[in-house]
Each structure stands twice: as structure tokens, then as C-alpha cells.
Image (cartoon, rainbow, N blue to C red; front, side, top):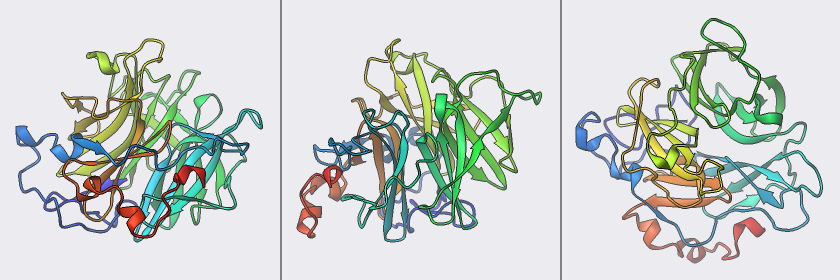
Length: 338
């Protein structure tokens, strides 16, 4: 999770959420967030690709992670970039397991030699945050039921079981999937966004991570009415930026989900009432499960499915020089094939 102060951007509020980036002084904007023309700042909606190839992908060979899928998660901690991802090979196992990779710059990634770092149970579509020295991973499990894992270092993970989500009246949810768990922690309250069959995004809260109670028993972000997200939505991340909450979500316009999974943006002042960006999708091709990361100078957008791709704000010097990584001595070979 990223939390930004409205006086400069990007800037991380350290006591509240996971530190993913250092304070950056470039790209600052002084306009108040509630000014109509600034409700969706261009640096959140106008993206250009970094190069033509993915930064990271399945190996394509006879490995446990021949392919990767759905939401991986990127955190920047100081000079270290960390990526957790879901790998699978249906010829080896039906289950999907957790992989880990690192990078010095968020561009070139190296798989951990001990991968998969967790294979105790089906783990995909992961969301990671660090709180009080502990890494918390919210993920989908078997039959798209959300579960929680914890770790002291981001490598050694321990299963904590399925999330117990209740209706407003305290009754258990009706049987069925509740997946793509996304968490925002603020003032001691854990806010959990989840989807049910990608037919809407619900919000539940908890103070102890044991029982989660719906804020409303209807979605806080629903389908449509426009065509681009009329048939599927799922939230991937919440950030706080210039005094507002922004949610990165993916969507599908095809009733059978055969069309591209696009990346979209919504904004909120209270986490409950959301306004979709009128220009959605912000990424129109088949690139979804987006995660925003502060690189110290600007925000980057990583899309994770079906491979990890990087998108940069239009006008970024990094976008104009995608060969910079090679010039700094990094291999030009596709990182996903390492």
C-alpha cells in the first residue's frame, strides 16, 4: 500500500503503511485534489509502455513456473525491489505456487534460487504489505477463497487459513468464491476489498484480521454501466494520493471473458463511494492486475497478467530511454527467461 501526503508527491507516510519508496521531489503538484480538473491527475491515467517486451514472465520450459498469472505484487524497500508472483505448470501439478524475485532497479529481475518459496497450498493473486515488522500476504486459494499468510522476511511464509468474512448482520457469506483480496490499513482498521466471481467489489473491515464484516452487503464498485467493465471487475490495489484514495482495478467487456483484461482506475474520498475514471481503461490492451510503485522520482505502473510489464507516466525520462538498463550493465536478455 502507498499513502501520499497532499503537499508533495510521491511521499510515503511511514507509521501507517508499508514503506515502498523514498520521498520524491519531482512531479509535485500544488492543486487541491478536489478541484474538478485534478480528480484524476494525468500521472495516474496517462501511461506509456517501457519497451515492447515483458520485464518478467514464465520460463516457458519444464519448470514449476513455466507460466505466471494474475496479480503478482511489487514492493520497493529502499534500494531493494521485491516481486512475489504466482507460477504454475499443469503438467507437473494442478496447484499454483508462490515465487519470488528481486531487482536492483525494478527493471531486471532475478528469480530466487529456492523457488517456489511457498507451496504448502494453492496461492495466487497475491497482495503484500508489511506492518510492525511482519509481512502479510492476502491471496486467493483453492476455489478462489481468500486466505492469509505471514512471514518475518518475505521468504518464509506460514499459512494462517481462509479469511472469515461476514455480512453486516454477522452471518457468514453465502457459499462461493471471494477472491482477489486487496487490503488498505488505516488508523488500526484493516479494509479488505474482495470480489465474488468478478461480479463486483465488496468492502469488509476488521481490527483483528480474524473476522471481517461487510461495510455494505452490496458492491462498493459494481459492473458497468459502460461497456469496458460491464462483465467483470476486481480491485488490485488502493493508494492514497493528493488527498484522495485511488483504486487500480481490472475489467472485462466480454460476457464470456474472452476479451482483453484491461486496467482501470477509480477514486474515492471514503473507501466506500467510488467514481470511475471517465477515460477508462487506462491500459486498453490485455495487460491487467496493475500495481503502482513509487520509484523515488515518479510512480510506475506494473501490470502482472499475463506477464509483468512496466508503464510509465507520459514524458518520463525512463520511458524515453528504455535502453538505460543495458547501459548500466544489466543483461539485455529477457528477465523472465533467467
